[in-house]
Length: 247
Image (cartoon, rainbow, N blue to C red; front, top):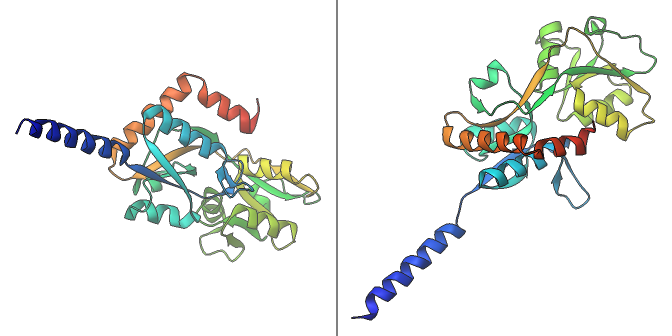
């Protein structure tokens, strides 16, 4: 009988250790065709600014994550149905998106740019009227093109990724692409012989990226915001930003 308390104590310890080892791993959806924010390296690992950022946030806030490469449109479906707990994929915070998901504090300032052939005379978005425009479906570039030229415009051609849209531009299938500044600038750095140029229309407004969670998941959102604030305060954010974007 004297052994029973010891056995019970050992059992409790084992259960507690098991619970610790079974700590929840949050599934982070990201679309790894959007360098330098997220892409696949030669080892088929997800790398990039967002990958480093969300890992640093998780480390600081004390939770575990698993990055999963996910097609763009499926990111938000997965968030709604619980297949993804977090989306960290250079997602612009918009009023429309805030109706269906919750966002962290902004972590990156962006804006749209037009990218076109070097000899193309396009200087503003208005100059694209009547021309074939490439965008990634469901992105800010897509929304901007629809706002200017109409949701049903046959001149707006949608692609599954920005890389596909840019390759179509180089092949002459579209005359311009509208996309986020970070990704198109990176594409030009990685493809110096592409003979493309950037057009910055002053009418394009600033945008802000946020990390998304399922609508109403306040507990997880608070942990993310706490981690984000901490890495901004201790210099980790600045180091990650410098790694991918320089000074």
